[in-house]
Amino acid sequence: MARKAPPQSDGGFTSLELDARLIEMLTVLGYEEPTPIQREAIPPILAGSDVIGQAATGTGKTAAFALPILQRIVGFGDKRGKPTVLVLVPTRELATQVAEAMHKYGRPLGVNVLPIYGGQAYGPQLRALKQGVDIVVATPGRALDHIRRKTMPLAGIRIVVLDEADEMLDMGFADDIESVLSETPAERQTVLVSATLPPRISSIAERHLKDPVRIRIAGEQTGDGELPRIRQMAYIVHRSHKPAALGRILDVENPTSTIVFCRTRTEVDELSETLTSRGYRSEPLHGGMSQDQRTRVMKKLRAGAADLIVATDVAARGLDIPQLSHVINYDVPNAPESYVHRIGRVGRAGREGVAITLMAPREHRMLRDFERVTKQKIETARVPTVADLHAKRLELTRASIREALLSDNLDSYRPVVESLCDEFDLVEIALAAIKIAHTATGADGDDAEEIPAPAPDSSSDAVVRRGAPRDGGGGKKFGGKFSGKPRGPSAGAARLYVAAGRDAGVRPQDLVGAIAAEAGLKGRDVGAIEIADRFSLVEVPEADAEKVIKALRAGTIRGKKVAVRRDQREG
Ligand code: AMP
Image (cartoon, rainbow, N blue to C red; front, side):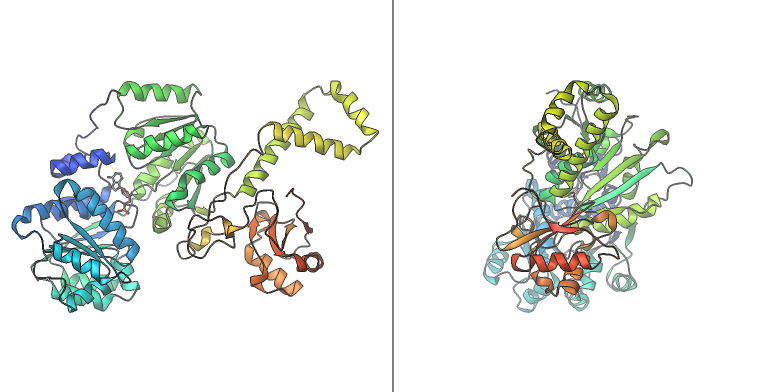
C-alpha cells in the first residue's frame, strides 16, 4: 500500500524535540499528533521544570508525562538500576495501567518499569527492585511500606509524579503523599497531574513544587448563537465491549451517514475491518493513507457506496461532508475543543445531527467539560439491550407494513385472506403475516449477547439494569441468566411483562419497589430486570408469579395502572 509520510509539520511530535526512537514508536502505535496536554506539558518536563497539569483521564495525560520523563531517564546515564522516577497513583488499576503505558513507550529506550501496589505479594516486588528498575509506579501506601522497610532506595529519585492527585487526596492518601515527598531528595523534579485543583492540592503544590509551570486544557466556550442543532449522548462502556456497543447503537440509530472517530491509525484500521466483517459498509481514513486513497474514500461516501467512515482527527480535518447525520466518538476526544470540532460536522444547514460518545468508565469526568463548552446537557444513556433492538426491529416491520397499506395495491392478496377467514380470526391472520414479514427481513436472526453494564462504582447513571454481576462484569451475561432475548426465564423463575418502560419513566427500583410493596416480596427475591422503551421484563420466583401479577395489576407503577402478564415470548 502506498504510504505517505504523516502530516508532521508544526503540529506533530517532531516539533517537541522528542528522541527519534520515541517518535518512531509513536508512529508504530498509530499516534498522529500530540494531544493538547502533551503539546503543553512535554517541553517544560523535558527542560526539567516542575509542572502542574490539570487534565483528566482521556486527555492523553499519561503520555504527556511519560514521554519526556523516559527521555530524561536516558539522559541520567550512569545511575541506571536504582529507581530514578517514582510515579504515585491512587489505585492498583491505575498503577498497572500507567506502568504498562510507560513500559510500552519506554521499550525502545530499554527503560525498566515496575508497578507496586497493596495486596500484591512482597516477594516478587523485592526481587524486581533488586534486579534494578528505573521507574516505580506505586500506590502511596505500598510505596511508603517499602520506604519504611528500606527496600526501595529513594536517594536516587530525581523525578516524582503525582498522578490523579485529587483522587489520591479523596482516598485519604494526603499524609502518605507528604511523607513520600519529604523523603525524596529536595532537588528532584515534581510533576503533578490532577483533573481538579482543589485548595488542598494547591497547598501541596506550594510546599513541594518549585516555581511550577501551570497547564490547563480548559476549553474555550463556543461563541453565542453558533451552536448547531445536535442531539448529544454518551454511553459509558468498558473498552472490551465497545465494538459490540457500537454495532448495537448503529442498529438502533440507523444513521444515513456516519463518521466514527478513533484516536489512532491502528484503531481506525482495526475498527473499520471489524465493522466491515459485521456487514457495515465502512471505510478507514487516516493520516497514513495517500491523498489518492483518501479521495477515493470520500468519493465512496458521497456516492452512497459507504455508510460510515472511521477516521482519526488529523485525517478528518478540513473534510466537508454535508450529508453526515451522525458523529460517533468511539474514543473520547482528547480535549473539549476537539469534541466541539468533531461534533460540529453534523447539524449543518439547520438539519438535526446526532453526536454519540462512547466513554470508558474512568473517562466520564470529561463529560462535564464537553457540556460546558457546548452549553448543552449531554444525556448519559445505557447501551441498547437486545430487547430494545428487538423492539426497534418490530417498529421497522410495523413501519413497512404501514407503508404497504398506504401505497401498495394489495388486492391480489385478498383471496388468501378470505380463504383463511373461514378458519381463523382476522387478527390472527394478520399476526401470522407479520411474523412471516418480520422474519423474512432476517430481523430475528440476531444472536447478540447482552453487553454487561460497567462496574457499579464507575458510573451509576449508565446502569439501568439490575442483576449485573457485582464484580464489574467479567464478561458474563446479564446476571448470568437472562439476556432479554425471547427465551425462557431462569430455572424456577417466571418472567413477567409489564406494559410500561423507559418512556413512562420506569426504573428498576420502581419495579422492585412495587413488587415489594404490593406483593410483599423481598427485594432480593426479584430477579433480572430489563427496561425497554415501552415495556419492562422482570423475573420473580415461579411460586410467587400469580401473586405478583395480581398485586401489580391492583396497584400502580409510577402512579399509573399498568397491564401485567406472563411474558408470552417463545421460550
Ligand atoms: P490517558 O488520558 O493517559 O488515559 O490516555 C488516553 C488514551 O489516549 C490512551 O489509550 C492512549 O493510548 C491514547 N493516546 C495518548 N496520546 C495519544 C495521541 N497523541 N494520539 C492518539 N492516542 C493517544
